Image (tube, rainbow, N blue to C red; front, side, top):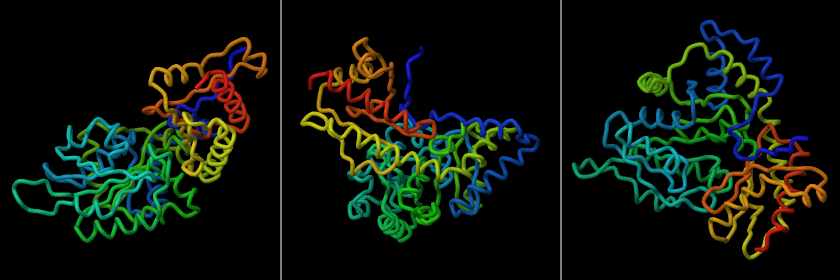
Amino acid sequence: MAPKFVDMISDIFSKPSKAMREAMANADVGEDPMVLALEAKCAKLLGKEKALLVSTGTMANLLSIMSHCQERGLEVLMGDKSHLYLAEQGHVAQLAGVFPRSVPTLKDGTHDLTTLAETISTSDGNDVCRTKVICLENTHTLCAGSILPLDFLQKLYNLAQENDIKVHVDGARILNAAVGLGVPVSEITKFCDSVTFCLNKGIGAPFGSIVAGTESFIKRVRRCRKALGGEMPQLGMEAAAALYGLDGAEENIRKDHFLTKKLVNGLKNLSSSLVTIEPEEDQTNLVFIKIDKEMSFITNLTERLMTTTEAEVKELGKEIHVGCKLIGKDIRFAICCNINEEDIDDAIKKVCYVFNEIHF
């Protein structure tokens, strides 16, 4: 019998359900009416005038910055722990000619507003870059999927408007933030000028990200998308999958959050002077285990979670593999629509067995 594989490497690898596949098979792909319907639905959901389907979240963020910064040599502020700053190949500098300046990220994914205000450059001098955009990440991946508080978003947006600066939100998991706060997502996005979010992850579609903002902004995004080779016809099947996923997104994300708490509660006894899980940090669908050991030890630990021994099978009653992601010296588990309660129970058994097997 094949091993039971609980795949929590990333929610980006979510797989379409049978019903979603049927929606894809029945999609109209002619002049892409499904794409237009998806974009209209997303614009309304996010409280923006227009939305546009693009291939990835990385492209969505790049297109947004390019469209806000219509001349080279401008500056964008972004958190020093943000995905945009650390994991998108510096594309705003590489391709858009925009200078990324980092600001310290606090434990909850926010920034100190006084520090942020002091970092903003509004000078017209010839020797400095002028700040054009402030970028946020919500939820914040490297801060355990934390949700940015609404009062912080409002204060930051007010600060930006006072300085004629745009606010862009990398909202790959912004629907998780809305469910976590118990508010419509438009209550979050009203404090930004542009926002992106992924159509896989909590939604479960196999492809795509959305960019949303004003009509004039999306017109510029569409033009930039063409220049980057991102214009793709006949995406009706992909759009149909996203439309299906959006209809059940709130219920599915609520389930993901419930399973996340179940995983945290099942693993909290692992905490020691060398292993730390902080339940209050796990607000959405990401769980981090912090391990104070050398890197080779942690790497071996993640590899061990993907193997089994005879003694282990005898004790657990089955062969279980658990996929996770190593981020720095933290082990991250991402829960998405493909994970169910039985998967979480098996993952808890496996992780606890492996951690008890290894002496810290």
